[in-house]
Image (cartoon, rainbow, N blue to C red; front, top):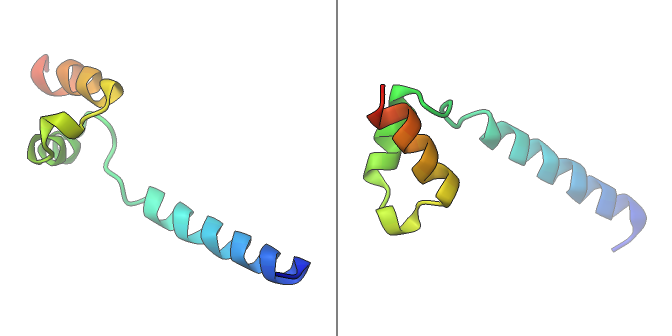
Length: 59
């Protein structure tokens, strides 16, 4: 790829990632807790498990 094509791909990737990132519910919100309850517990990260305990179970 030439330099211009690489830059275009990088910019498009950044725009897509930014738009998807804005769609995630805030950690600790009711929607976030509901989404995590639907996710298999084996797929939770350590941070998700800690945040779930802190925000969803101890409210």
